[in-house]
Image (cartoon, rainbow, N blue to C red; front, side, top):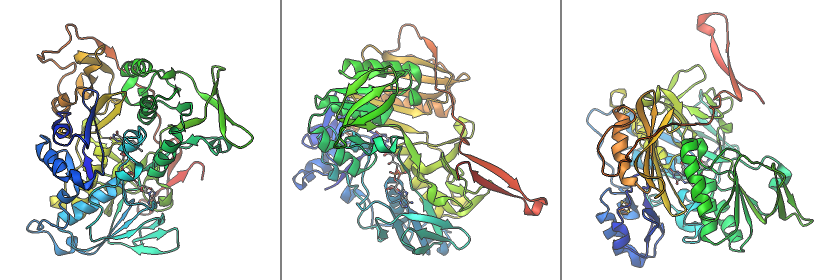
Length: 531
Ligand SMILES: Cc1cc2nc3c(=O)[nH]c(=O)nc-3n(C[C@H](O)[C@H](O)[C@H](O)COP(=O)(O)OP(=O)(O)OC[C@H]3O[C@@H](n4cnc5c(N)ncnc54)[C@H](O)[C@@H]3O)c2cc1C
Ligand code: SF4
């Protein structure tokens, strides 16, 4: 049987651990770990756990709701429920969109195009349960993949998009026509920039199931590990290495781990946490070279501070790049920060006009959010991929008056060093931060973020059940610092500068030029700086 836990909802109550202790375990106070593919003998226990979960965070294969389409609401035009919908990117967002289409009564044909060969799988466990040897990589297949009544084109990259002809071009030369299209091609791991060094045996990235499988096998040989980059993925890899008792050095260009996402104040807490757990953390430092032996095996890393480390494994955790190359020349506003769309998930073209039949969802999407001054957000969050895919799918088969905006606030979680870190809102959209509940020393606290006197985000360390409360404050633009009576409120509230990293221009690699003299022939053209 297959299980997936929506950890954006999970509040760490632990009922699932009581109901099915062989499947769910609590690593620390509230960092839930689970086997996504438990033995069938566990079925009764898992179903009991799903029923007991107070926030309904567990999805089990037979509860996925597929094959039971809801009747379409009155008034829906028949053509919106038939035709041919093509989804490019057959992972979390693509699969959730496809499931929503069927659940909402779409009876037309459905094609999912994905460049990976395997069935869709869940990525968050790869850097957690899989690397720490709790779960094999092949256990991460999603429930829900079967029974969609869809054509699956696996191992089949899309290489182009013809909007005029409504066709997706495939790398194998085929063309797939569509009536409506969903773009859900996500992101890929940024590779170590020196290709010769990246090719050394022992240099890894972590994005796919194969990446996780290879890295896990190598970690089993007890190597000395270097993690390059202390964002969420790098920090989780370091945490898994320490759980395995491995010697691990983390090299981070910024002043602390997680700074890019949470700012320097919380970054300093993350740095302490890493060091307490035995990580050799080097901040304000870069790796200048990776060196191998005559057999091409990684042996050493040179650092900007002059140090030389003897290592057998290096994991480049340098962030991600959007999978947008296949859209080059399509006329859509697609660039380094993703494919732009409106709040209804409709793709925007380079002229800034929305399309009525091309939609975008998941990590590849950039979308405006009213709570953040209509800034375009580009998120790499599991919960956002799910919510946006559901809204996109609903809108694809709905009349304009029934369409919904994608307004849910971003929610993120990470499990590292036995601590459950969660965030709601956009912490980087802040000028101030304050610990408003609990204690940093106990590693159990809530930090609220403010922008111009209103609450814009919150981060919790082992305090996941408070997140919903802060979500409400953000949605209501409550004043910052928040003023309320809580038993665990610090005696003195200290408001600090948020110390966010400098923003990078979204247009760093692309430029738009406007061509044509007359108003009726003026068009915007996207110019790739390197292309
Ligand atoms: C190791 C790891 C740990 C994570 N942990 C967390 C976590 O703790 N919390 C959290 O909130 N999020 C986490 N995430 C992020 C989360 O997994 C992503 O937000 C989610 O996978 C996004 O889903 P998606 O479908 O938009 O994109 P993806 O999962 O990237 O899927 C896109 C799919 O499209 C395919 N594709 C790309 N180009 C083409 C093409 N041209 N033609 C056909 N197919 C194509 C890709 O191969 C891929 O299968 C983690 C991610 C990783 C890698
Ligand atoms: S909220 Fe649900 S999934 Fe999370 S620990 Fe509790 S019972 Fe388990």
